[in-house]
Image 1 (cartoon, helix red, strand yellow):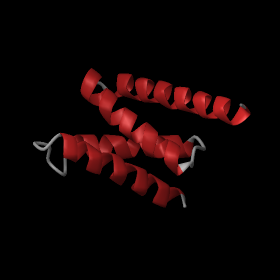
Image 2 (cartoon, rainbow, N blue to C red; image 1 turned 60 degrees about the vertical axis):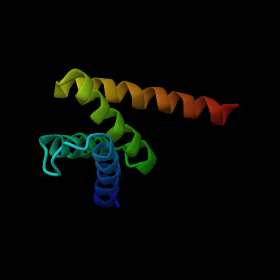
Image 3 (spheres, one colour; image 1 turned 30 degrees about the vertical axis):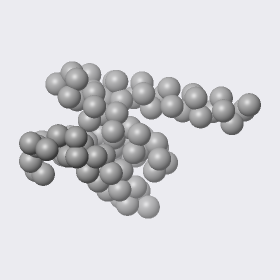
Image 4 (cartoon, rainbow, N blue to C red; image 1 turned 120 degrees about the horizontal axis):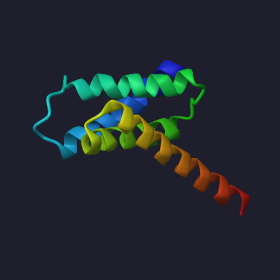
Length: 93
């Protein structure tokens, strides 16, 4: 399941990214960067497909904004944490 979640989340984020950025090559380095980021999330124990999709999209958006892998990872991690907090609060309500 883990590799399917990684592949699916990356494919979802990458397809959407290409829709917004028509000049980007299918083999752009950002594609492998997103795969590494999502794989690291799974290695850390996060297998929730919906969360992986959110993290993948946030990572690509942040990578465009900061042009730096480390900053993009931190921003995506923050976005993921905020989503988890919101989801948890709505379940408790």
